[in-house]
Image: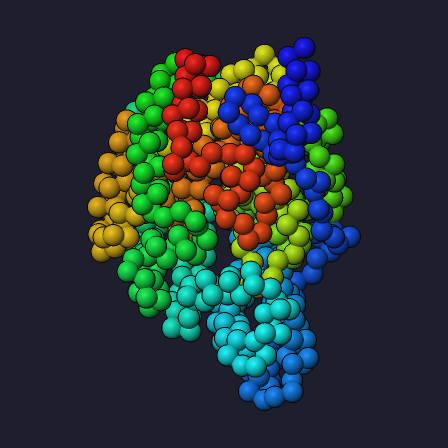
Length: 562
């Protein structure tokens, strides 16, 4: 009867001309039908890599620049610009393919070199496109060009042109080389000698003091090698920001990520997390740590999650999401394995307009990782192809993934049986720790880039101090395992902001499952060129920087689990 009342209330609100259903103060707009772009009928194994002709693209740009200064070339200029955009799509496609093939087998130097070549080439082509676009906008062809490309395209160009310059091309090449060096170094097996035997992390028994000492020996080695690479990256990135006219690298990184919130907003967010989430997470650990340590779900693997995922999608998720799953399976657009040469990561990317899901099961063993990555996969599936200056907002993207993890709680009884409730607690606990970790790493990076000349030892001490503040104990060496620091600086706060929004969706779902599904459906339709805070507002979520959502979520979790 309660569900029927809510349904009738929602129907009444809709008939009155409002946008959605209200659940305890949440106004969830009614979702629109998904618009699914076309996708190719090509299997991953049939995607062949071929290095694009970069010289030919540069020549096309040169030819068009010569025509721009002459009158009577409007049709040729507009057509030629489109051709170059299509060429850049091919470069982007081949870069993604080379990256995936390199990640599948890090020992294959060919794809490593190709990826590095194309990454460097794209930086230079980006500058050439800025040059060409500016040239067109300063001629009589401006009005026709703006009309064809659209005001949004021009606005993105104006924002993005300050993020690159020919002055930083050499530095960008050095940055890419160091990132590749990090990936290879991080993938190697580190060992320690205990009682005359060589042991890896996986061999250690943490009930023995000598093995605990061995753990720290391994991480001191790892930290020294990877931390040295990081220090070089910090120096290069500071120089990049300076050459582009930024006072500090943090502001540049936030702009590069397309954020519509500032580092000052992030600091206020972190203060609220420290006040409400940190003590809550500590109490959750105290109450459940022993039970969670005894939890054994080793028989339930990432691969076994496929059948549960398929069942869930058919039962209550939009048809477009079911189609995305079928498309992934039919065309083998995923790599789930534990091969020793695979990149130690879980991620989802896109090859032109075909999503690809990657999970190294030596690092990620639970179906929740599959659910997380499929949230990303669906985002890319709805996104389709991208153009030269399109942007995918990370803060939104991580809601797609983390919120879907929480929506899968509905199927935990089937997946985990008698351990279902404890697994829910584990995921909630992990998400609280994700919020804390996101804040820790953001503050750590911010302070490193405020003092870029500090030694590696000082960096480790700094990380330990910040970790202690949030978690109650120090962690000094292990931050080098976080590949985001090396590959995409200041990404990690997105895990925190999106986890808050995802937990808000969970909170809505505890009152009304249909409203939670609608809110998620709204959010997943935000793909390209959408600001984070606008997407939250339009989908029925709270602003995590100005609202009491962190306090409210913490109170509800405390009421439910403590």
